[in-house]
Image 1 (cartoon, rainbow, N blue to C red):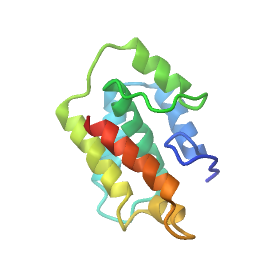
Image 2: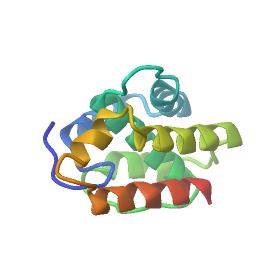
Image 3: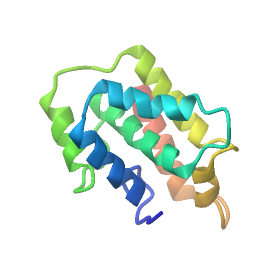
Image 4: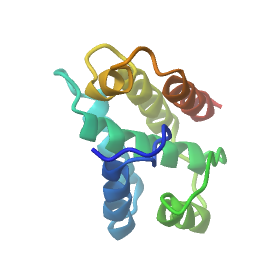
Amino acid sequence: MGVWAEGAFGNDTACDRVDDFSENLSLDAVKSAIDCVVKSDEYLDSDEACEGLVACEIVARLKGNWGEKSAYSEEVDKWVGSINTQPGLELVEAAENAITRILGEDSELQELWNEDGKNEKWHSQMNDLLVVAQT
């Protein structure tokens, strides 16, 4: 996985997911990516986690908490700006649970970011996303 930033959009998998979302942007697609993370009873694959984080960013943006905009989030940002909807409480809670799951012990993404000790910047980004998803 190519990574260049700690945020949700700063890796190859996330960019691939944004491309997928841009072809079929819908709340159903967002919910599906989040559910994949939340409902995983096994070791959480880093690709699934990255895709789930993109979906969590979409939930936060739908709530008006835009986070960092970049060329990597551009398609998602256009879609969010073009619709007039708020995510339901169930989706918001699922996004919160997904972020918590990604930060947990059985998460490959968490392990990758912490290979050389706790990566404070990544944890800070994830905690910021958790906070904006909640507010």
